[in-house]
Length: 441
Ligand code: 4AD
Ligand code: MG
Image (cartoon, rainbow, N blue to C red):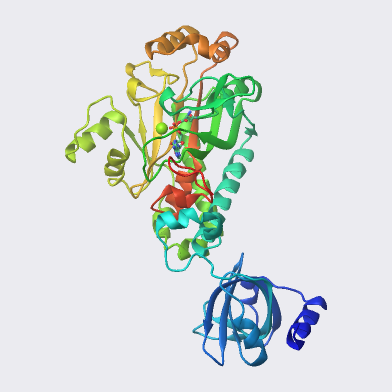
């Protein structure tokens, strides 16, 4: 250990009080401080060495010369360091302040950090365990944190009970094509849940208004910008509610989430280059159009679509171009939606369902609606959809014992983060994405 190192260590041992970088950037010139974090950038100009240090709160540049520059020179990109120095304003420095470095200690060395020149999407996904340190991912994860918090806050402040549902299930909620089979301990085949909806429906008979935030799994084979195989799902179910009631809950919820992000994440939105005005416009009421009206709009725009088909990403993108804030498309045809959707009594060929489509090309972020509450109707529809009523025995029981009208919805949290943060691919909305081709790292 050199004399310099011994001195630096003593200084640290003496009980240095480390400050968060965000806090240091607000301090007066001349304040003597210490920070700790990781080397974000490194520039060696011979006599002077510039080290940009990052912690969870921000980045600050520290300038070293003399003996300290020798030590600073050893700190590779992403090395963990402790730095002491004096705050000084400098218009050229990121954040407008820098540290005149007095000492630096490398706590965890780092040599040849792999992320340097190759920043292709595929490579960054291969090294996602390291890329989560990037300023972009840091910003997205802070927004994601706000979104999760806001979802809980909304429901809990409005009399909903938070519940937890199983991930291992025995029958499809959203169609067999995307079920993930799992070999269970007893040798039988079970599945990973596609949605907690049926369990939420069971729980309204005890708690009336329930919600859950949990993963859902879909063996989506299509590679798109908005599909994960494991995604985070915020679902709610409400006894006695109608389609109109549930749409009002959805728009209030989405607006609540946006407001929280606007309050808490201005810095992150700026770093990501998000046009916040587009978010500020998303005040309820959102637009409401019927599926039939949507078909007219699409046909007028030259898209060819059969009445009865569900919309894909292209149709949704074309539709939302026409609207400056989110839009509900309600009353989808029966065959475009899962079996549990209730028919509109005034027009049995359509269902009391609604998807919420986000603007700026993002498309569907929520699916929901009223559920069939009568036993005979549900059994008849299960059969009509080519499914077996015996696979849904416990779900049918809910219609045998005190059934009531009810409605609910599921919001895709990753898609919501993607939209709010203005990302162009869903994999960037979650730290460790799971897609058709990727379950590592
Ligand atoms: O529209 P979906 O399939 O509806 C349901 O699962 C209902 N059972 C929910 C309910 O009523 N409780 O899925 C709901 C939302 C979609 O709008 C979308 O945002 C998201 O979940 N989602 C996905 N997000 C990422 N990757 C996928 N593969 C997704 N599939 C659905
Ligand atoms: Mg859907």
